[in-house]
Length: 376
Image (spheres, rainbow, N blue to C red):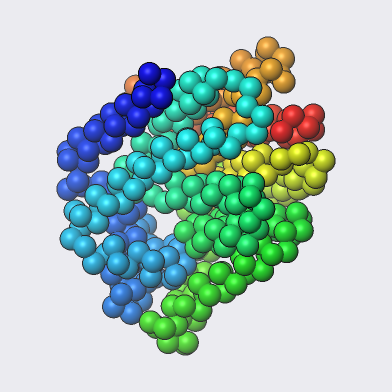
C-alpha cells in the first residue's frame, strides 16, 4: 500500500495539472512564450535580442534558442502543453531525486516530502504558470550529483554545462569543479560550453553569431537595475535596493555582502573535503546561492533550493528548538504568503521588507552550520 500511494499522488497531480492547463492554455506561460518566439527566430536565423520586445526580451544564450527551436515549430498551444507537462514531471523528479540522493537520511520520506512541498509549492506553481526553466536547471544539477555518486565526472561536467545553457547562473558550478579538482568534469564542462557558444554560427555565420552573443550580453547587463527594487526580487542586491533605494550605497553594500556570501560558500565547499559524501550539500548550497546572488533573483527561483531545504528538514535534530522554529517560520513566510489572501498592499509591504531574503540567508547559514559540524 505504501508503494501505491506515491503513484496515486503523482496521477492526481497530473490530473489537476491537466485541468489547470485546459483552463489557461490560451493565456499565461508568458516566459515560455519568450522561449518559443526565440526558438522560431533561431530556426529562421533572425535576430534574437530586440529592444522592441521590452520587458519580454530573450535573456538566454543563443544555444538555448536553438535547443527550443524544434518545440517552436509546433502549434503554440501544443508547444505550451509540451513544456507545461514537462515542467510538472520535473517537479516530481526534483522532489523524488532530492529525497533519493539525500545522504544518510534520518527522517521519514512522508515528512520530508510533504513539508518540502508545503514550503515550495507556491514556487512550483508559479514556475509552471510562467513556463520558466528553473526546474530544468535544478533537475540537471541533481543529475550531476547522481553522476558524482557513480564517479562519472565527465558526464557530471557535461550536465552542468548544459544547465548553464539553460540558465547562465549555473556558471557557479565551474569554479566548484575546479575547487574539487574534478579535472575531467572541468574539461567536459568547458568542451560543452564552448560548443554551445560556437554552434549557433552554423545558423547565423561567424560574424552573425558574435553579434548575437553581443546582443545577449547587452540585454543581460542593461536589464538588471530596473528589476532590483521589484517586489518579487529576493536577491541580496535587491534587498539593499529595497531598503536604501537603487544607488551607490545599495550597490556597494550588495557587492560586499555578495562577496562575503561567496567566500562563505567557498569555505563550506572546501570543508566538505573531510565529509564522506559532500556533493549533495555542495550542490544544494550552490543552487540556493543562485537566486540570492543573481540581481534578477525572483522569489519563485527559490524552488531550486529544494535539495537544501529537504536536507535542513532531515537534520532538524542538529539544531536547538528555537532555531527549528525560526526555520519553520522562514519557510512559512516565503512559501505560504499569497497576495490574494493578504491583499495586494500588505503582500507588497511584506515582500518589500525583504524578509524572504533574510529568511533565505538564515537557511543558508543553517546549511553551512551542518557543514561546520560535518553533519552533511
